[in-house]
Amino acid sequence: MHPYLLLPLAAAVLYAAAALCLKIALGRGVTTWSVLFFSNLVLGCIFAPLLLAGPSGWNPGAAGWAVAAGVLFFLGQVGTFRSLQSGDVSVATPALAAKVVFLALLSLLVPGNRPDPDLWLAVGLTMAGVILLHRGPKVSASRPLTTLSWALFAALSFAAADIVVQVGAPVAGFTLFMPVMFGSVAVLSLPLLWPHILRPPRRREAPGARRWLAVGVLLLGLQATGMASAIGLFGDATAANVVYSSRGLWSLLLLAVVARRLSISDSVFDRRTFVVRVIGCILIIVAVVLVLF
Image (cartoon, rainbow, N blue to C red; front, top):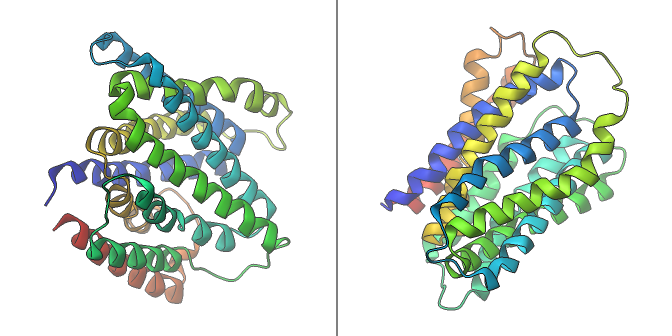
């Protein structure tokens, strides 16, 4: 077992908690643009203190890698939201799971990197498991081709960002790369996302909406540190993302435990859907075990 893979495992658990908080915030009137904007600002703030570590080991000439990773990460976010806005989530989410496949393929371009056969099997199991986890009652998608295109674009952008982190962070220096990368994401958010925040909301926010938003974006930022550290310090983007895919499992378990108490309605309470998602969880658990051991 590689101990550093506990970082994406912890990130997966934190992501599940963050997703639940943000689901509640969205249900109480917070817009998706607000979630994206404030999440990006929090990411920039969380990684900025790394600059205090000083220039030892820095290579400012390689900071362009970090900017490129930030742009790719931001493009992935845009693709994700555009895919969800243009059609059915049951089309978008499974397509986003293609990230682990894109990662495995892009990793072949990294010199000296030859994925283990078990890793390819884990990638396949993860892809199948994530698709099953997001199966639910069928809803007609208005523009399935557009939805699929944006989702695959997002998956490829996120995968490329992770590869750039894997290659560029050791060259530029981790404590320089991460602040520049997520600082770029925060800076891009100001001109591109702030106008959406200024638009009048379609409905009024319910009491407590901003509190759930604050907790959600903070947890989202913390889980990002786990993934960034696993990839940037240990250079194993594909394995880290296979383990990180267990976030679907943790989200399902957390939702099943607390959703009714928090008055959240979800298709997970449909018996057939629950059984299918349990099968998806089992596939992902097998994939994670293959990677960890």
